[in-house]
Length: 300
Image (tube, rainbow, N blue to C red; front, side, top):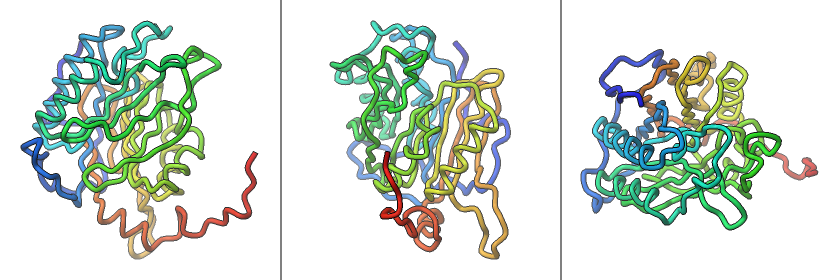
């Protein structure tokens, strides 16, 4: 188990168009959250204890407290945090969404008034699912996403695939989820864009390379979305990163859509999205849904 690196510690290659945080999380679970110009997502680039449900719960809730104290609006975990995603997947470790493992994160979210996107191997009547739950500031479950593009040819053959891409509102921001392999299919981000998503959360458990980074860059650009992607640390892994769709300045000069990127070591990674700038871009530019011609597209 790695110690938690405080957010005040130096980060590896944190870069780009990062405005200052506009305030910390709500101080009470009964306080009505305000719509923020800056939406602060904290990525959890840490290892989870492998196949240890009690350990992943204890460490995960401690990390949520650390991130909330540093001003996170929402804390995003890497893929299948409940087990740490060791292979082969032990299907007997699936937990119920209404059970004590999830309840611990819901209670922590409510106690701190912070959002949590927690990931787990979840029970399902058709077989376990690779699931992300977005938990609101009062501990309510706002969104459940079951990974749609499961690795049926390999590691996730025993899992049940999800059936769609839904969105939910958190602090006035419309959120969606693509889990790991979901990001490799353009339809995933396009479905979320059409459902109104402004920020897409991407929990991963994979080796990282420029090809995968460019996929996320393209998904953000073509759908006019912001993307927060988090991964487990390690040599050739890590590189949790955030992208925005704003690719030109007011004078037409190209901008780097990558606004934040971590290295490989265990750390908390802050992503700060200027929602006013993103919404202005979405309203006046030509990508996303503004010039689609769905009558010309064929479905197979």
